[in-house]
Image 1 (cartoon, rainbow, N blue to C red):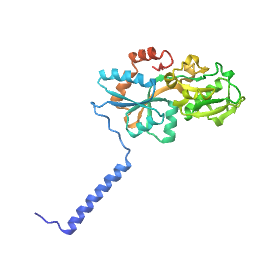
Image 2: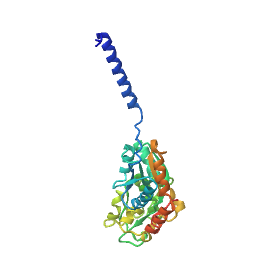
Image 3: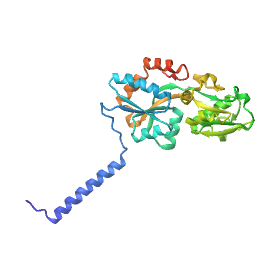
Image 4: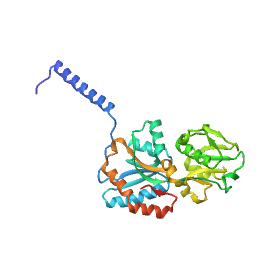
Length: 281
């Protein structure tokens, strides 16, 4: 066996260490890539708890016949599906509108992109005590979601109800600080969206989106005020599929969305939700 000289041994050791360091630096500088799941493993699709999952499960049932298995994973917190998507724990999600996604990307630096539209989800202002927004008394509490885009959307609807007036130009991104007129001096409380139906026992009125309204047995036709104009409000309550930027062209994701946006899934949605949730295709 040939014995290496001390100088030769040190040279090889230094060369190996340098190569390892170079590979480590290269790996640290590159954006982490989430490998596509194997064909025999299901796509993991995230969704907020509620009726959106029912539509996704119907699409998953049909997509399996087309060779694409999908597992639907429900989250109880609206912040979780995007965090899980960014981390690579799920492959796709479907629970949010474009303004909400844009805000999450801006504030959390997610590498997530919007794909095709899925559902139209109008919201309403509900009350257990009053049958008209005009009947809500001075000083009463009203509740809105505590996330920025849906909070602004709720304030717009309370403005439509004639209860408040927002500063000009604030629009969807309005906050409680943008309330210019509040003649009844209503107390505006911000609550997690999933808890808004329960808040109706404690507040005069609350903004509730259709997924949580459906779970709570609230009928959009009984809302004090509702988002009724699709053309006017479509940017606010149309849900989109979202994927990580490095997975946006994944053919299995494209196939699942194609099956979702098919006539059988449209028929299922119309029959099950009877107008409270609508297909966007």
